[in-house]
Image 1 (cartoon, rainbow, N blue to C red):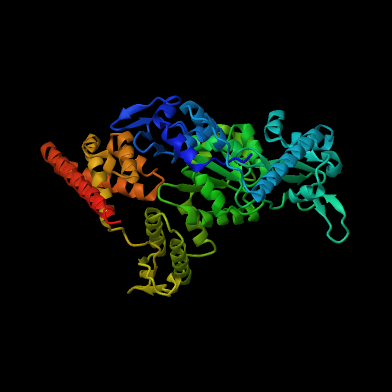
Image 2 (image 1 turned 60 degrees about the vertical axis):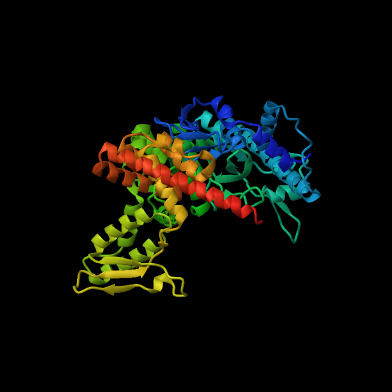
Length: 573
């Protein structure tokens, strides 16, 4: 039987399920206008940023970005699969669950193959774990590294003895080859274990399924670490070791810690740091970092201080630039002396580690400046010019964080003693990085100009409407009840939802707005808060009341006109 339902059935289940009632079983909801607010069930917070819309039938958290329907709430909060969520909701609504739509023969074969791969990898993980007890050298090694029994059990650490083909039983050889447990010589047909005499770390996806392995030698053989090859299950550039354990702590604390290897992740977990993950034998990728930023606002990179660690740190900084949006941050830890995370925690303890990671790490801006200044003397004009030019190229790569880009630009200008002018990008064929030039009248001052990555500011009528609506909600959220909800779209609902659950004090609201993940929503909210502050500083209470009334009338009239125009247009279709 397939695992997909008919679209008509899914729509019926969705329409007959009430998200307010569903969420209310798990979260204490409070009425706020036409919506409901609560403390977010997906991360820890002190003031409510979670809103549930009875009209739109979705939930949204303005703190952590959680968003979805009745199906996704049961999946994210209840840990159900999609099929289980559909069946539970159908049962609650009194709807008979029909036969699921059967997949094609090809889809059935692919799903069967994937299931077989997961099964054989799970069996291998169990065998490796059992082997550990019978391998004194491996046990002695883990004890020498400080591993406790509970850590070994939690991560399923094992040992690869030779003979996996015999030990694993009836699994076909081609399946063992596909999952990377054996290597077959194409010429001779000879088969050998890929992992031999190595400490084994199962690599799991976010759901906790084993999708591959990482192995570490006990002796001086090379390579020291060896990962499973790419497969339909395992893509090293997308997965993060330990994320299945760290996902919830990362979401709750809004901070993720990226370290170099499996050992670091496991030992940090043992010491009480559950937010650590590691890339899998490659440099950090944009996909991996994007995955973390969907869970948190701040990523801390903690790499070794050797040459390889510095290279990994520099690479991570470049990747962070491409993923950065205003409201997200990154920082870089270089531990003192010859410490790695484990040795630092052993000597100083978990509280010192948390302080170092959260308060003493070098921010991304500082890391970029350090990279730009490396091997340069800014007292020398030639080095200063090269610093400025490289600084401009760095600024070009910041595509989605204009506020951060402006702040970094100011600091580079201060150090270079010259102005950096970012020209608006044109649609011509000239590349932005070909427009670098120096201008100025003095030897220590000038301007470096280059094509900017910043696009034009939106000026459409719809954007103006959202800004006016945002201002109305900032001035008086209750006034939004006077505007017919049926005429508003989903983005308007998000605007209303944010203001309905935002803190009342101006500074707190501004800080909270920085954490909004959606760039368009964040821009509307921040603009509305700024203009609200200006109005309240300039106008008395009576004038503000008239201002609110005028906005309500104007917005309501515009929406009504749009609705009539749409009805008229439909007559001619």
